[in-house]
Amino acid sequence: GDSVTQMEGPVTLSEEAFLTINCTYTATGYPSLFWYVQYPGEGLQLLLKATKADDKGSNKGFEATYRKETTSFHLEKGSVQVSDSAVYFCARLGYSTLTFGKGTMLLVSP
Amino acid sequence: EAQVTQNPRYLITVTGKKLTVTCSQNMNHEYMSWYRQDPGLGLRQIYYSMNVEVTDKGDVPEGYKVSRKEKRNFPLILESPSPNQTSLYFCASLQAGGTGELFFGEGSRLTVL
Image (cartoon, rainbow over all chains, first blue to last red; front, side):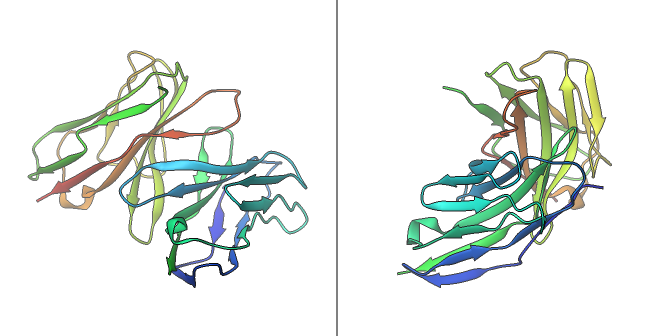
């Protein structure tokens, strides 16, 4: 079945460091891909998305490129802030639902 | 304001006492879904509904029931809660044929003693 695998956390970084969170997906068809973010005590909200190969989604300084050849959708940010501390979920859109990865916690210290 | 509203946000109950978590969305979305979030397991889908009167099991449906009598509401029913249903629950909705973006409620933290 559809699945999404993302790196385990927590990822701990200092402010202004470079961030990469890896995500790979099962290549059944050509799914739309998403990154969601969950801030403490809140529900998930969409961070960015890409709907076809080579698309780059971007928002709030975060970027992810849909790589069909490696079935990957890694999340990157050039300079993280303390306010980026959250749990990040990679997801793929199947026929009837979004399938989520297990989430990666990011902790950014000043 | 477009939103998904869940109630209650927090609940402590005892084994076997039936409870319902309500979910309502104001975006006229056809698709609605329930997830539970547990440490180390991420988000797992419980049930989903593609439209009124159409519901299907997700990955972890055991011990739960749902109904979809009207488009805006999708309640989650625990007929006889057990401690292993202690979790954080999220309701979400999605516009069929749209961008695929799920809109989430703020979550309902349930503790079953």
